[in-house]
Image: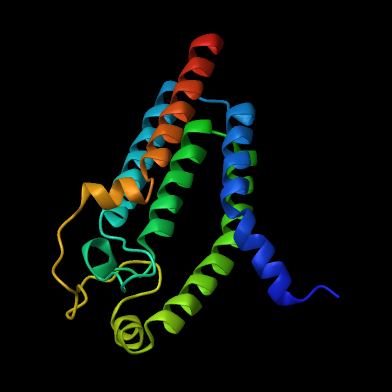
Length: 185
């Protein structure tokens, strides 16, 4: 018998692959123009900057990361991914792509956020309780977390967390959308 836990585990494991398939579908379904490309590139850039900033602070499973954007939101990587998805949707200029990304977020991200929140509670029970009481789950708060450890951005962490892959994928997507505009034009 399939349980809720089995479904959640399946969705969590498939979230990245689903995003990749959605981006490929966005290229195929796109009806871009120069304005949509520029708007999309703007959103994508904001998302990449946020994700990059987060990855330059993230020390997975070794300590609770509370510096950088983690001072304002517990999930800056997913918030950055939302901005990137908005950019892909804007660049593609397609309601089908908008629906696909909305479905992707509604299906995968609540599961991922729940699963990772549970892991943080298990790994860092005391510090996470304090942190989560002060820092919003997703949309950033105006006041930073007061007990955050002062830590500067690290290019080494950025590389360890392999965030450069998101940058490469975004550039490839924008290149394909640009090619679609030139071919159409």
